[in-house]
Length: 488
Image (tube, rainbow, N blue to C red):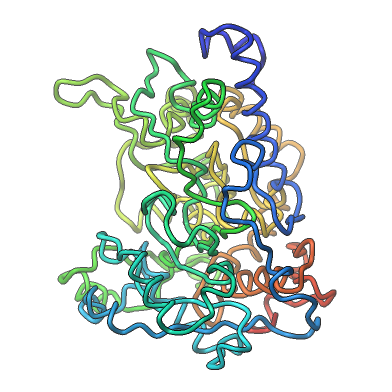
């Protein structure tokens, strides 16, 4: 937690209000980050429940809906085929976009069709999922129309109020990309964005109010103290939604094929080869000379008519703070702006630690680092990251709050001194598969199915042993991640 002596400077309000704000903040922060060193997953909980009560859409657990089930039963998913909605979105116009940042809407149904988890019998299904694009292109499909089509397809939505229905939402702001109080409040959203609220931080500024106006959790605690928390929309429901990796950064088409897509509507890039899959790239990882790496938007030069750091709210001040305090170190590379794709991924492979912060929504930096063997340093206050509730993050990365950034360099030095770096890099040799969707190497799909199975069984937790690359989904049976797929 932030030292109490800092709070008056951050808030400038009476002590009584500070106590109320601090209590809310402690509830938010400690409940959120307790999972960083643990794999325990509560069956039904939200770290905001103390404030919002039961208005979280998480009132019914899968155990309550389905009762006791056999431990050997795989989760069954019924896929709604809704071609009329695909036509409205020019589904066929964009071709294969599964390697883009918004491609999971298209990739996940394909993986389901090639798995034993899909069922054509809706009566035996544990979960239901509409096969639609909710994000691509950027004008999101109307969620109300999707729910209306699902309800017309059969009685299954109304049986649970949609609590056993799954939506793939790759939009930047998750649930906050849709109007507050929509029809899918009880449904499971598969998101890339685990940000808690839709609070804006346009006043984030080094010269005024740092860091209280950069920190959305502190902003939220302000609203709690003022009795205005009802104005906040939740972008992610804890214990209900699942934050999953995005589908990009997975090379699967030729450069020529991808250039053909780029000449049309698809704008994303094809990354260099994965060093875990291509020995000729692995040599880059043998000489990691950069201690900490980041390349992206800093907005450090003064824009026309503006002042330096004018765009710092993009990363909630994290990138600018790291750059200002530690960017001068010779063994750190905190780079303003982008760099060519090949150079960027080579730098990831040649760095020990890689900074992963969010922007206006979720971040691609996390997966980029993990799949190149770079230990992620995550500074994303107020946001749950990919599979944070499913995997033991403590073993494979560092999760630091914003207020610890002034101690960043000593922390990284201490981790290296204690000999944790070789262990964490070895663990990343397993972990990268859990963030990779494509066959034959990807196991992100298995992590998702494992979590759904755990919920179906009503088990308290799924367990993951990253040293042995195995996981257990609530039935007492350990699955070897490397040996195959569709095996949970």
